[in-house]
Length: 162
Image (tube, rainbow, N blue to C red; front, side):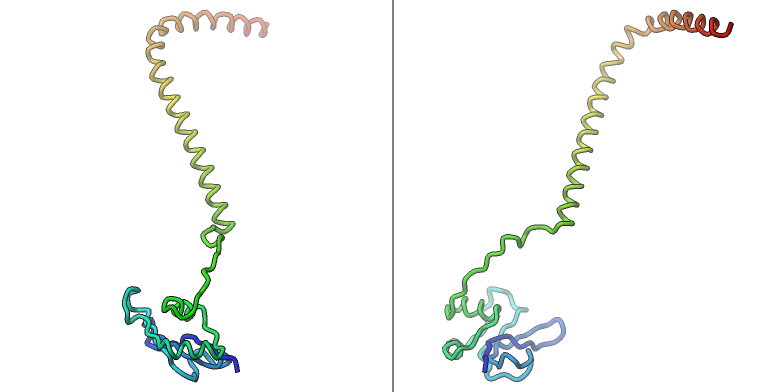
């Protein structure tokens, strides 16, 4: 018979309370068990001594006869110093998915375009600020140039019409 040390849920809805039990691995989660060796109350603060209560002698006994702890119970046993648990390494845990990467790239390109537009607007503002000083000095000259430009244009249209 395969024996497991695992949690059995109790408590009300959204108010969990667990028993740490030794049971046949084929039995249901909240079904019959061989022995209760502790309790776990996740509603208490993490630094509370009442959060996990464990009968260490019985846990050692069941481990010696071949009981396999679940991952959560293995963590409790490691914290109690009964069973060593190797830390797991998942380097891709914090890495965003493909869709999130695409959204980030789109956001970056939009930000770059906005920066370029802002720089262009600043340059236009600078040239516009410099232009009024130049325009004040050159306001008289364009009127004379425009009159000179209109005369040849009228002559060209008259030549085509004849």
